[in-house]
Image (cartoon, rainbow, N blue to C red; front, side):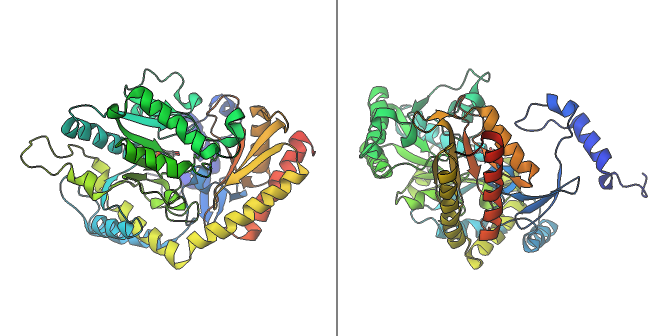
Length: 462
Ligand code: PLP
């Protein structure tokens, strides 16, 4: 082993190793034949540096809305280090100290829920929830009530079962056939609701769910799984009246409400969880990204005591939840999550997310006056989107090529933003902003200035 020459300090060696051997997520590799792959080497606060030394403001918290407390938090690293030196991993039927203590603190933030099941990705947490639904159907409903309803434009993960509940065509295409028993309900984006839009749209959008419930048969439906705010599908905040009606439908037809908080959880919208913005009471909540803020891999499937009770029956050999996640036994996840939770409280990151979200929304609305290409600005807390249109009157989406050119131009200016995730052909036209919850007005001004310049360059001003 050559100790004098450290390849990690040689940018060209790293880039070539990456180009030769790494298969990056979510990207066509052909351009890497001539363009260097981007390699991020360091982060502090909400700024990151790439291997070529360029500084970027990261307005997407690690690319996929994860690093809520920002980069370089020594106390998280120390807590994880101490924990893994003492006990790094133990899985199966045993518990661990950080697992127990994090569960207790998490449940304090989620009145009405009481049990935490550990896994390590958002997709996996969702699969746990649906396995619970399926087992409840077998055990308590004679095999009926096995169907899982999901919404158009929502995304619940990348595994085949999660894609079976995937409302985003481009993510799903070519990966079928999918698992049976997953049924789609319509989206609730008023901007794209056509004749249904206008006063009372929230109730009408929820009524569309009821139509599906009645068509399928309420006694065949186990749960309704929804994102509180649709994330990658274009930052869709459900309209007024929607959630109340959805909750009523679940109660009326004895359908469990599963809220996927993988993105909105842990302060993204300005409350601990997105569902808490709407005053609803879910039966199952799944979460991942922000839980340990990317410092370790962890996800949780949290349930009410009454869901948990349905598995407590020692007269039935198959009555317990026969599921395991090997890395649900890693202690780094809950050790990091305990610190993230404390940081979020001590630094009032929920309050900052709400205040800075309003600030960002205001700035994006100001940009709307300047650029007709911005058709709508929507979001909650530090989770904001700007839908781009070729024509404000017809709302024809801006071509994806141009949306991507705006993202690329921002990147060239040292600002990383996102776009709805190439999910709906023709509708990948929403710019996404989800910076770390520590963002300041100066950070956000820098982001908005870059977007302003990029739009002017790519489409001109109005
Ligand atoms: N649920 C939502 C709402 C998501 O946005 C994602 C990922 O972006 C997932 C689930 C899947 O999470 P993971 O990539 O950790 O499996």
